[in-house]
Length: 91
Image (tube, rainbow, N blue to C red; front, side, top):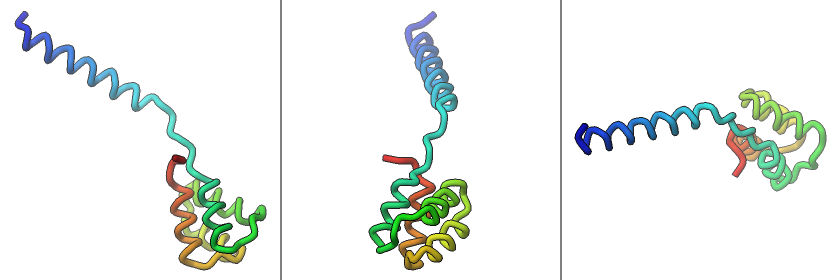
């Protein structure tokens, strides 16, 4: 076997093993604390309603999250931003 063929085989095997590992790693939880912090910075009191709304944002219900945060006193633009933050992985 030629060296170039062997190197290509090793690299292909390495790539496949790393790709498989990346697929097997569980997804990171979305960022509820970031959502709550953004709502708090916008002037809302952190209550169970804010936490519940941010939890809806995590599950992908952006409209439900925004409606919940708006009802809890978060202005519309800040509520939208907070709900979008809820959908991202924590940093």
